Length: 95
Image 1 (cartoon, one colour):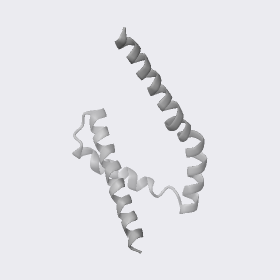
Image 2 (spheres, rainbow, N blue to C red):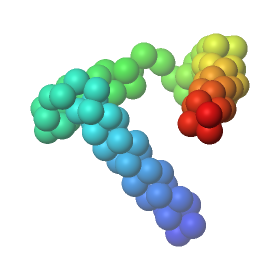
Image 3 (spheres, rainbow, N blue to C red):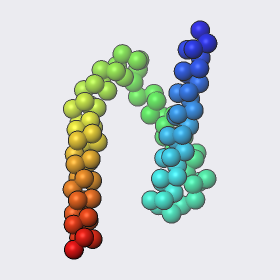
Image 4 (cartoon, rainbow, N blue to C red):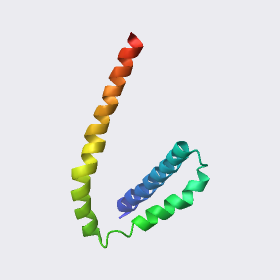
């Protein structure tokens, strides 16, 4: 029983770290102080949490959309693009 509580506790901390990272990222992108991003981002996440009527629907939609569109972009295309950019920059700096 306690192992389950510890794992859920870690998930809560992990989500807080992701939220903090998103707020800091928005600050860096827009130049607006991060304190002004906390409430709008929290409200957006809270609102989006009601899109799925139940857990099963959430998983089905996630499997359709994430596996077919987001996974190839973030797991294949983006790392390959970053690798190509790194290789080109290394060639330019070595010349």
